[in-house]
Image (cartoon, rainbow, N blue to C red; front, side, top):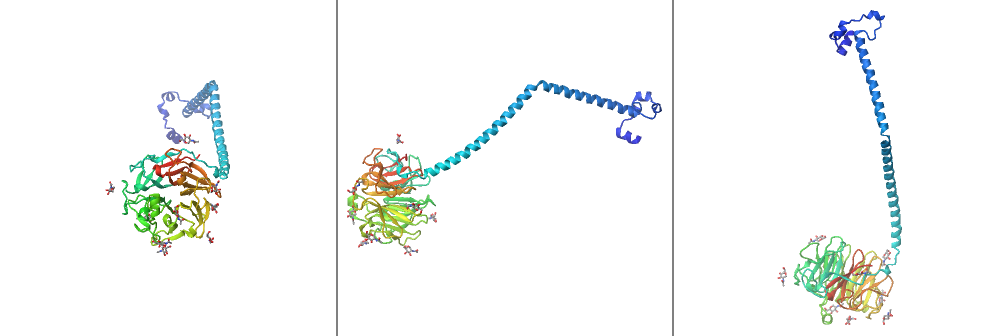
Length: 440
Ligand SMILES: *[C@@H]1O[C@H](CO)[C@@H](O)[C@H](O)[C@H]1NC(C)=O
Ligand SMILES: *[C@@H]1O[C@H](CO)[C@@H](O)[C@H](O)[C@H]1NC(C)=O
Ligand SMILES: *[C@@H]1O[C@H](CO)[C@@H](O)[C@H](O)[C@H]1NC(C)=O
Ligand SMILES: *[C@@H]1O[C@H](CO)[C@@H](O)[C@H](O)[C@H]1NC(C)=O
Ligand SMILES: *[C@@H]1O[C@H](CO)[C@@H](O)[C@H](O)[C@H]1NC(C)=O
Ligand SMILES: *[C@@H]1O[C@H](CO)[C@@H](O)[C@H](O)[C@H]1NC(C)=O
Ligand SMILES: *[C@@H]1O[C@H](CO)[C@@H](O)[C@H](O)[C@H]1NC(C)=O
Ligand SMILES: *[C@@H]1O[C@H](CO)[C@@H](O)[C@H](O)[C@H]1NC(C)=O
Ligand SMILES: CC(=O)N[C@H]1CO[C@H](CO)[C@@H](O)[C@@H]1O
């Protein structure tokens, strides 16, 4: 036992002089040793030190507690701030969640109201903004055009122009002040090689690949220029050989050359989602369909049956409803035809009658439709754009109406297109510019 204590405490009592000099007889204490034996003395000291320490700590704690109690107001303030902050955060979060939920409900309700809005009441600012070309000045510079014909707006709202008398296709990025030649020669030279064009009249950019299809009218062919390609390939017609055969597009008609002072050509083009090509073969008074990849011959969609058509010009294909809309320049009508049917329905104009009242047109050229079924017609010789609401034979003049160079005027509009916001672009052909009319 003693051995264990010695080794565990490591204190040699014999080295403590006072304990040595004053030995205490353990027997005097009746066999019980408290603070008088050598070991017990030591433990007693330690116990006293422990008690003293405990008292000190207790005092310290009491003092410090007193100190804290002296800072009572601060503690209260902190607690109050924290509580307020938390309450405020919680409240904000809950308010925000509630607001979002309510907004989303409101939006849904408003959207469903919007779809029932009368699209027939759509109107456009009558003052046009020139977005390509210089008013009344033709030229071959990058900010100029020379008799623009067909136009196209792609999914990015970039503008493509068939720059007819410059024998090139210009692309104007949305908002740009100059255009870039993406097909044909930049310097406006015509030709029949694969990198040249000759009086390009209409264009279509397919949605899937952004490839460019061109009515290369003067060459009696349709050219495909792949996206960013430097030359094209012929996908319909025979270069330099127009005629009324099923393998041909366009022909030379002397009366058109004399009457309109232009060669006799093809004017409208549409490419469906399977890359089949539809061409309004104006001077053959017909619409042809060329199956994708098959250049050997096309099939007739509609022709000059019963004299109904004379100079087919614009085209719009409604794939969902399997129907095609065609403008006919010579008879002054718009026809709707279900694909495969032999007869179409006149949906605007009076066949064989030209005029400028609301039912009549004079030389309808390019056409388009919006998603609400409104039909838009570039009424070229009335220098205006007419809108026909679904099932209405009465047109509304939405822009133009008199011939001139002013910003509310047009001169022989031959192309039109709508962007994703239904802003209207018009190819103002004889003013050598493209006008943009903002939807109100
Ligand atoms: C139409 O456009 C012109 C020119 O940009 C502008 O001054 C005018 O305020 C517009 N009118 C409306 C009704 O938006
Ligand atoms: C137009 O550009 C083509 C190709 O760069 C060139 O061969 C031709 O000589 C140019 N024509 C004129 C009139 O500058
Ligand atoms: C043109 O593009 C189509 C589809 O994007 C592709 O199948 C064809 O090979 C391309 N032709 C050339 C000559 O690049
Ligand atoms: C096709 O053109 C030829 C002359 O090139 C003419 O004799 C023929 O009648 C025309 N066919 C039709 C259907 O117009
Ligand atoms: C090409 O199209 C024509 C007209 O539809 C058709 O008669 C001919 O069989 C087609 N050729 C091929 C190789 O598919
Ligand atoms: C087609 O229209 C032109 C120009 O208006 C006219 O001279 C010609 O006689 C018309 N042809 C037919 C067959 O109606
Ligand atoms: C197509 O129209 C013509 C002229 O209006 C008519 O004689 C003919 O019967 C019509 N054909 C059909 C299938 O409706
Ligand atoms: C427009 O003129 C034609 C031909 O005279 C007539 O049949 C039609 O009723 C007129 N339209 C309006 C709205 O006056
Ligand atoms: C213009 C037109 O006929 N539009 C119709 C096309 O098909 C859809 C779906 O059947 C109809 O809702 C449109 O009215």
